[in-house]
Image 1 (spheres, rainbow, N blue to C red):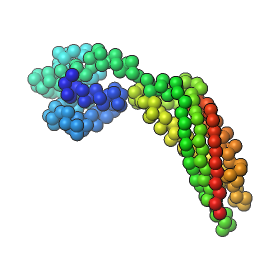
Image 2: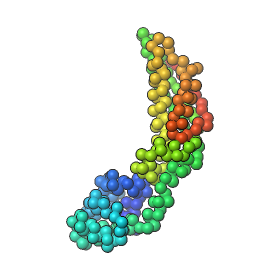
Image 3: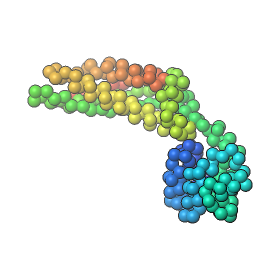
Image 4: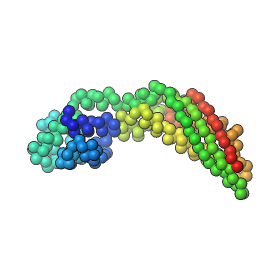
Length: 232
């Protein structure tokens, strides 16, 4: 493939085909930043993407050139240049590769166990008394119901079906962190008179909260280790 087609394919491999629709301008700027295309070529590709040339059913260079001439107002010569790039990009081999790789990262995530370490802190203040509270949670998690996890990740996978297992891991970790932060803060603030028992009591509460999260995401908790700290 040409240097330009290779560069666009690399973007699709990373971000998904839908990126050409939602972030065509970012494709344009990346082509310039990577020096994969000169300014004129990059601008013509941007126009072609905005017109939806990549979504046409007929993907041969001649058909794409006719479409680009009609919809983008480019000369036959310029349209031929851009259609040649897009025809390479949208080849049968590339489309098969993208089809085969769709949700590959999701399947990899489902096939493995994942370890998470989370930390959260909160303050308890009442009648001039103050206590700093913190907790550290280590856990191992696996997928219990792939369909439930897929539903929970629907927006992420729809936007980019090539989302990697590591990206899914980080997404789940961000959600787990928010769950822990919200639950821990609520626990520490629940009583204005009695201070929270972070070291002895919150561990079981935290375990329940994580299990509730796992149920919502089709996950199961394999191991759970908790450590809490209180500092007046």
